Length: 138
Length: 138
DNA sequence: TTCCGCTAGTACAGTATCGAACTAGTTCAG
DNA sequence: CTGAACTAGTTCGATACTGTACTAGCGGAA
Image 1 (cartoon, rainbow over the protein chains, first blue to last red):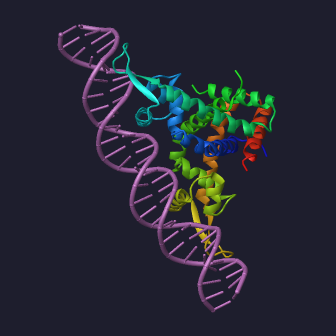
Image 2 (cartoon, rainbow over the protein chains, first blue to last red):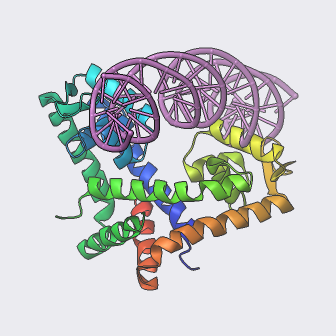
């Protein structure tokens, strides 16, 4: 059977939820919901809610919720942006950074556990292919 | 930079939602919600709700909802299973099959559009890698 | 200035999701 | 036969999500 798009889609879909499921426990131990974690991890690169929404392709309204939770949990802090008073510049706290790094390790470990049985070459291959496919986005 | 797990995860995540976003329009034209479509597509291989829930890794309660909708829309039909009277054997109707096939084409087309810039070989490669990673699940 | 069209973030309210408890049917040991 | 332990599927109620409408600030044209 050929590798048709729909096939790959579901394959990918399943892989992602399997990995996520495996890590949910560790994340909750750190006090993080799955979605919150992704927002937290993105803060370093995209310090404003609108940017996060765009980067993670989730609605702004949802980002509002996750940011509120992360602030309540003390993982990030809001600052007023001097450049543009509408914007909230998000800054990870020390605990935020720590939680994020631990979560990232757990996630990477799980993914790596699955990648362990394929070659390093395949891994690079995979990254290249996915990046290529995403690039054509717009 | 090496292809670490978290990196690949988000890459993959974004790719999936980008593809899905691009197809949502066509699916709704066919009268299908995203989640419903996946259930409909799975019926052929996994004709019972419990099987579908396991295969797609979604809660049974959610399958109940999607199946109800699909039945209401005339895309599938429930039959009593002679082997086990607790089970509902799901059967795609003619319209169901047609909608499913069209949706699959749309999805595949979009995915393919993104794969167009990489080789056929890469495509097979990708499938192999993903399958390999998923297999290690348990 | 003042107006106008634009963007950042939020609030609210309706929908979607899903854990837990339930009903119905099965299986099998005694 | 029972009935205890199990599985299929559903229902219910609580929570999560997100579209839409909103407020506040920006930036530029006149």
